[in-house]
Amino acid sequence: MPVMYRIHQDQSTGTKRSGKFYARAVPVGVMEYDEFCKEVQRNCTVKSADIEAVINEVVQVMTQQMQDSKSVKLNGLGTFKIGLESKGAASYEAFDPREKIVGAHVVFTPERKNHQKPLLDGVSVKELPQYAPPEPEP
Image (cartoon, rainbow, N blue to C red; front, side, top):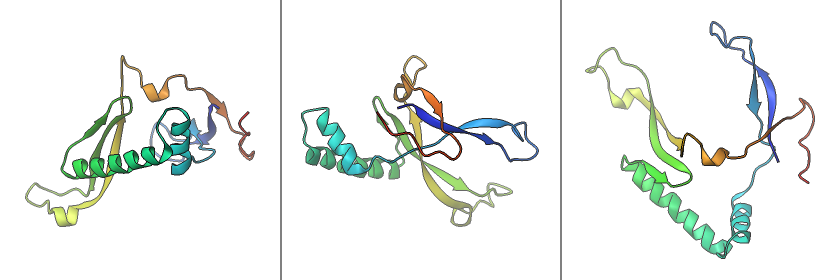
């Protein structure tokens, strides 16, 4: 199935994007965790319970490593690290991390090989009509 998109008009003001129309990807469903594990099981010789155990451990190890200020590289997928959200300070001395650091998030950088992103190999797109439900998969 292609990646579905809708046309979206940029509503920002005072930028070169203002008022222009762009494609925006629209997810048409969610593959839940257990369904994901079953699909992986269908494609290899490992049981779904084993896949769940490995994924759970991967999440735990990634969490620990990223919280130890390391990035985690998964070959064929990409690199994960923690990024911070902060408010600006007038000077280095005025930066109080208890006040200025306001959040954290995970930064994902897809792997690139020969200027290609493997997760996007063979991607195709199709416009999803504005008020139409997604088409069923064949």
